[in-house]
Length: 318
Image (cartoon, rainbow, N blue to C red; front, side, top):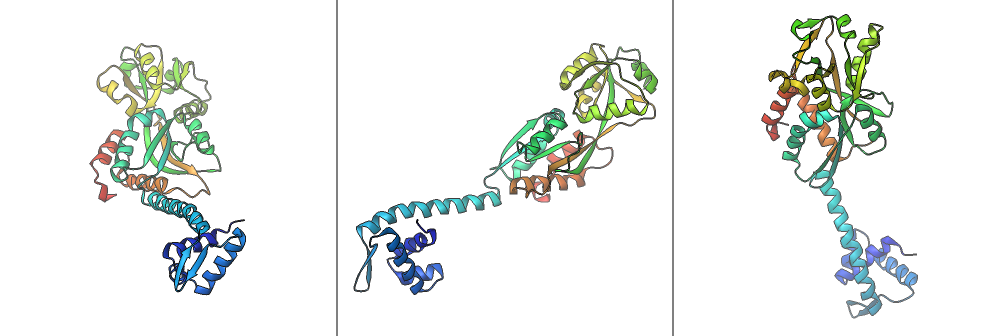
């Protein structure tokens, strides 16, 4: 069986045509080089070198072996360069899991911000409910996630990133729209369009009804935010969505929002990754960026404002 250390010594000796020079390059003694070459010749069962005076020459078999060994150590050099590249982020891949709302409203700015500093890293964004994204994290389909803690798994580490306001939306023509503020009792009597099970929004709204020992009158369940908005616009029910997802429609008065007396609903958005797993250089760089961006956030700062701050921040400041 071939010994890789012997092949390395042979490569340096054949390249320099000198056992002495090979010893210098490998930081070993010349007798050690001689011993390794004798062992290699014994394993191969043919002579690799011939000496004429002080000159060292490869035999025909030695030249043939050297051609193959050169390919090995050229490829080794490529591997080393690739490893260095991954540490310097001149190459790499980053798979991010997040909700559809964050994929639309926050990820473009985060990705753009990250790529300004690390343009060679390939980024893949996977969308789903918070629960689905966590499952993908556990199955190594995602490296990191920006989600709400809809499910708790001991294998997953959650680090707070920001808090997002949830608002009650309804059609501007809905009887409750003119009130500006309603009680929970009024809410419990109207059909509600729910986000899908496994989403952070659904968990918060379910908890609200459980607190009042009431069962919501669910008109429909869906993970499609745009469908929810369209149905609410048509007066088919009310719903809860993160404020940023409906900010445009509210400003255009195609949707209305009212306060819920005694309740301020919000989603805590976390940075999630697996415990006891060393993060790749690309993932660690993304986590570091998110942690530094947290310092730009202030209570009450909505996602749109944060996006503006992200884009306005110069690379060297992070």
